[in-house]
Length: 395
Ligand code: GLA
Image 1 (cartoon, rainbow, N blue to C red):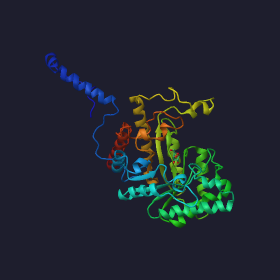
Image 2: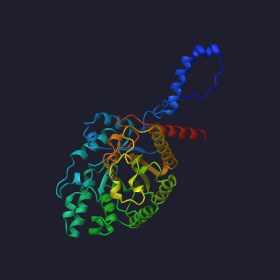
Image 3: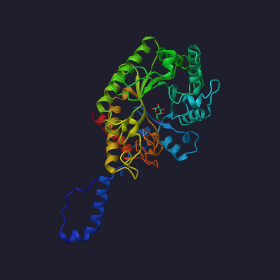
Image 4: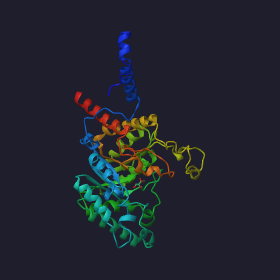
């Protein structure tokens, strides 16, 4: 809708008197639409996946209710808007491989069936991760036994989903913030070789699946250098790594756009694709930003740390929309290097960020609100894409 609030109109006083009530209503409506981030012009495309069809997959992480189809409202939005899916939890070892000698494929099979039926790109998350880890890993004392059980874990999963899962997070979160290797159970039991072995074992079973290393804070320069060193070491052994997953759990003001762009450029120099795998943008105060306070103290919920329980102010809604627009501007600029952008959840009400790092907050990190209606951020990235295409055709 065009904003007419600033337009000058020349009229005589008598006409003005007659027209005044009508003009007043028009101006009010127009003012409203200029300041209301929830009003939007009609779009040429019908969905996110249509908008970015030629650029990269647009994905979403699915919770149990969407996967088992009990939440049909969410499922319909997923089908309309997205062409790639990741399981938020049900492919993690604790759920899919609860006991050394038994798997629980029920939900994961539903998840992949959903992707297949709807012709979606299916991403597997995740083969090796120290967290949400099945307890049997901890129970194996002997290193050789541990190694062989880990190999079986990877190979059994890769085989079960061979030709169905298009890409895997082979290893999740193996790095510390300074770029050194996290002292996980895998490092302790198998040494640094576990990384290359994990990629090798997966590719031996499913050579066509695209294999990713995935982590958070991947824009942090020290961690970035660590990830680059790690991937180079794997590549030097003749083992393939197809991509780097930057999780993308970001904030309104950090990381900087420069760091995001720099990271995409540096990772792609490894000859791999970059995926943004778990995108969400928290609008709430970050306890780790508070100086001089014990982190544990900041994990207390309070009005200060949870300021938007009654709704997100328009000013912050606009800030979020602009932040998404700026980030997608970078993604579009480097679309040849980017395989996929996946949001970590569908609607704000379903986001893990309502519970982390402080429980019971009201966060607004995604493109759809608590009623699954598209937010200003949704329109901002589609609008950006429309402008981007117009510029391409005029140049
Ligand atoms: C990490 C993991 C995800 C998920 C999020 C929090 O980023 O990779 O699987 O657990 O944390 O929801």
